[in-house]
Length: 328
Image (cartoon, rainbow, N blue to C red; front, side, top):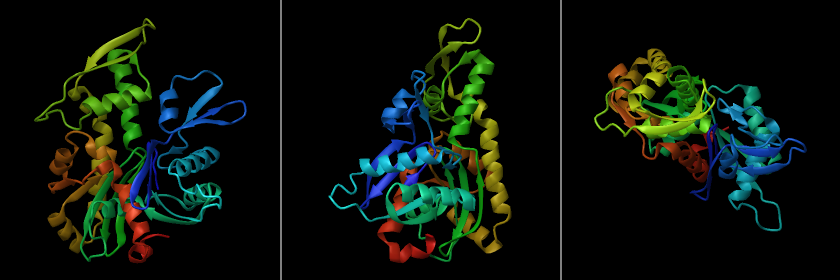
């Protein structure tokens, strides 16, 4: 299971069986769960006072223990695991940020236990992303993986099945959305919601102000701050590149900081193998060329970056004997 801040993916028997937003909708009066995943996402920002939508994970870790437990339980149910009369004896591998604390890790483990898992193992997200990208992590060769998810950007140098050095910063997709919301307020006097900001990011999001194949301008709707009336304006990728500039610069600096503490032999390997980008952030237009310009290294976007971590987690579970020392 890739229990992500923005999306959660469940792989069962080597196949992706659930890919849903990490959102729970519940009744404020009795805390009863109304919807989870895509159904809850449709309610986000559109509920009455008795219904609240919540993202139980923030910054890659659990912010609401009870709702995280319900999310995991519902995702397992959606996966169709344990439909027999007897309760399932599930072995789960859950990926976690490399910078997670012991307390945060225990919260993830206990949530999975309460949701019905019998044996729980953890694997770090950069390692899972590398396995999912078909990198042979067991070889004595250095690889740098940058996994930009919803809550965290994970940077790690991997060799011989271990993370030699790493950096984890809580600047990723959610912060990008906040940047867009702030920019629209400041520049256009328009208030938009997080879902709209996410849509803007997907349609015209960019990391550089010059693209060879620029996307078409996108019309977005929100509320005018001055009049309070609904308003529609057109935004282009150059504006969004400007809005995201500082956050992307922070990720670039984290990559440079990690390279600075990488042992020389592994740094030599990375010069050959390059940097591997994974996670939803890897799909941001021009991010690979911006990181390449900053580091002077080749940058590769892994195949299907959104599901790379989940695929790697699934491989670690399926080939448990091979990767057992990578999970804990």
